[in-house]
Length: 367
Ligand SMILES: NC(=O)c1ccc[n+]([C@@H]2O[C@H](COP(=O)([O-])OP(=O)(O)OC[C@H]3O[C@@H](n4cnc5c(N)ncnc54)[C@H](O)[C@@H]3O)[C@@H](O)[C@H]2O)c1
Ligand SMILES: [Zn+2]
Ligand SMILES: [Zn+2]
Image (cartoon, rainbow, N blue to C red; front, side, top):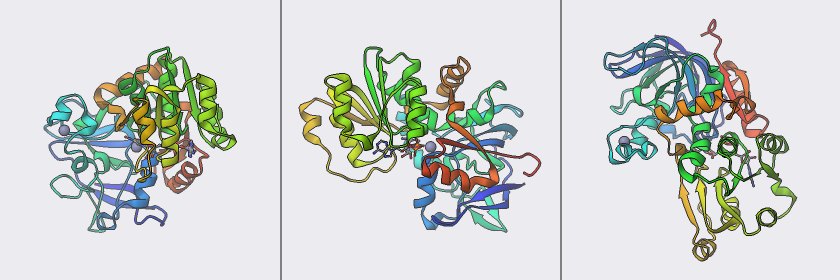
């Protein structure tokens, strides 16, 4: 079928919006007519570093829309369902079976090789291979082919533009708090980076009653939003961040999250931890750097990586929708809507810090 897609041709070039050919759904595939797609910082990073060998590609991994058709083997989703798209997992490897699907042994094959696992492309442009299948969706397009493991039915009540970021950024930040760190009410949490992921962590921490929540970000508008969502804020440009955190907490925080992927900030997070504290690393592609190992050792501190909030999308995203419905996860405060064709503007505003969570909306008449 003919669809419209935003094609990433190289790191520097703007997106090309073009008509392309999408396969009809195979037996295990779900065709989704997209209504909205969030922009995650990982899309920015991937556009910048995506290998030339598997370009051009259609990125996008926070899609939300309406199911238009399902293959014969698909049982859990029906035509007309409102759905959020997330990452794909196999469901049967030891990590998936153990409830930790983001660490699926087939994660890369299912989410990041630009084709189906069998090497076939889902899309073509003027007869030539066009890479896609990004996170089993490639949602910077009017339509996507997805799979039962990454399609989550969300009901008709939630605005799909608000629901779209639940598929990655919100799931990651909220899941890191609710599924991984699980800080009790008497604990203290510092979040480095008040972007889509960091503010989702702040919202989840506030919803679960964490006693002290601190957010660090150089962008004033983001600090203001973090404050509205229940955090004490710190401008890292205004002085020694670790001193300020110790001033607030006495000995340091019990929990920390790094969303900046900057070595110097990760060391600040380590230093800011109280003895036996835990730091979760979620920022993508932190560089190699000299980590403050002594502080980790002598303080008995724990550092762990977290992918996608350690969440199984089909269980966790409905919980997030419920929290949103109760007014305890106000994702709408993070988003700004853009027409799909203004994807370059959305990327620029995400990169500059102007918009926390751009969401592209699809004009049904032009798709
Ligand atoms: N682990 C995962 O599964 C997963 C999932 C989604 C996103 N990510 C990654 O998480 C990171 C955050 O994503 P996002 O969409 O929130 O990005 P974002 O760009 O909106 O947020 C990053 C924030 O860090 C702030 N920052 C920059 N320098 C800082 C400093 N010195 N101290 C404190 N804050 C500073 C920026 O101002 C920005 O607000 C990215 O690296 C993204 O690729 C990881
Ligand atoms: Zn698996
Ligand atoms: Zn993401």
